[in-house]
Length: 334
Image (cartoon, rainbow, N blue to C red; front, top):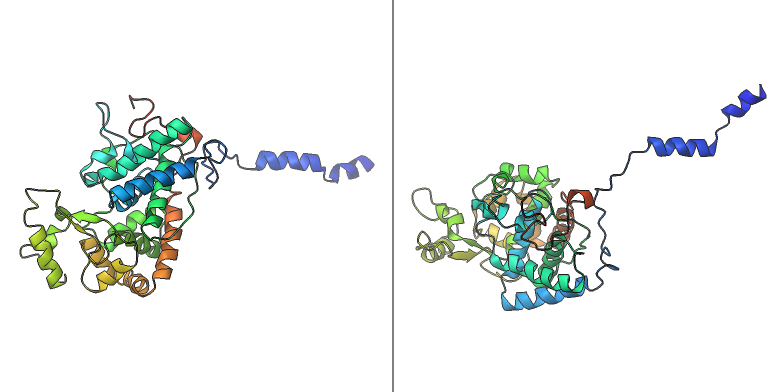
């Protein structure tokens, strides 16, 4: 009887054994991101990135907008894994060569290459291209007046980059709010976060082919500010023979990260159709109105959304690598 009573008393060591068995296994492949990831393995990481982006932005002022756009395009397909940086080879047509990525700016690719080169001299084989793109984006956004936000590090570079996967994962200028939000929702973003991230268009430019259908012919958009439309028509008159012609997304303060983008939408100064619909759709208009009158709230929402964007689909050790070159997989046959 005493033996039976003893057997009913919980044995802490036995309980611990069963708890360990019952607990879900944590995969070693899961990326554990933290801001001090390179503190010991590459202590000059932040300094090297900061110095490189400062020099590049001063040399080419469109670098900030281009890098921010590159980061978004990377994270929305296969997650933030530097897949957009891969160059096409004889075995594979990569993301960056899909038609929708044709206009991704060379300066954005260049700054990542510059940083990677400097880091490989300082701490070879340590820092991923995905982390370089994430950190450079934050530093450039703050450099042009945008909000500071934390960048957690420890991403690995992905093993795949397929051009045919781009369409349907990257928003297009002629899509509806519902279509665009479908892509954001798939990546875990709310309508409010979508509008906040759209505020990235407060810097940068778009090529005429992306908005020319709003300017010419019987289907021209009558809701564009008339003077703005006239100026765009004159600017883009030769865009069919010169596809490099472009206009600033924010005609008022094109080089400054602020809330002018949202003020412009209320004045009929939205450049892309996908910009203009944000002020027309009932689900997005309240946030446009809010951000237009309160830059502080916009900055807070944008910062939180960018922190979240940087964690989308990140790869851990078993799911990725640290590339020796950002435009090539370490296994060149992939």
